[in-house]
Length: 425
Image (cartoon, helix red, strand yellow):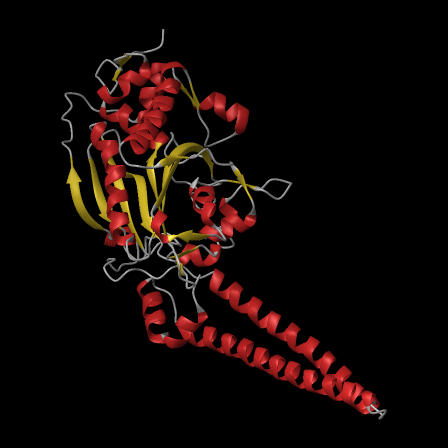
């Protein structure tokens, strides 16, 4: 969300930022709606002042025994006009808010400009890709051959884009989530949260999922929504709050199921676990001081990288272009893990600095002790990492020619010492 006053004072900067996202100018329309709202508000205030004066006159006339009927009629007329003006101001304010609620965040100055992922900038590649003496398989081929990954049973139960994991693979997925939580809480300073998986629409509005992306959400008949990511409940923990600046940054992490309709993904990644309606993800959220969010963004990216480094999975870090960034982000680092079965890097974590964009929508602020003034906090979020995609990466990178899968050393304590997953008898 944007401050209309800032747009009014900086129309060229606002439209220039939109242009970098490939969007048309909007400052003039915002300014016009805001001017209409403010003019109506001023008119209402002037009528209120006049009404107060006339009301005093009524009292004075009555005290002297005079006829106050004409003045009282004028007061009644003003009251009707004030009601109309208030309704007009409310309508203008709603139009302005609805317009701004649909607009994405402006990109940071150092974000590469481009229409899509082809303009993303590779920052670094880490780890050695393994050389195989055989043609590496994709994760679903490995999992099905092990007898531990069942898409047919899932389709019977729930339809497409679901999976049933069994035995050692079910445990491996659980192990990955526990490993990540232990790493983020034990080494990275995050506080583990177990949040609700159902949220109100106002929470989704706060993070920017509504109203723009309603079609990608699952809504219950009671009006609550299944979370598309735990970023939503974690970030909204500071909604409508004023946080003591001395307590920043606040760092939260959670392992939750996530639910997405994948409405815009028809025909993409239809086989396997890459893109599903339900998946597990460890999320990191930071609520940062506005002067420290850039440094927090770098730190958070390193935290996500550390997961893959400890699992000895090759990956690369890219900065997303203006045309590939998410709605609420002003800058995003994607971490892409190498999948030998696909012969490609695929996103496994997306770490974004949203600046004050979400905080304005949530009314989340901070204040120095002893001072009256407040500032909007900066919010950051990132996968730490997507558990299902990490499972895919482990299967493909640690596969053996005989169909077995070696378990990374970092995960063996979570697997009761199991070192190799072999085909299910």
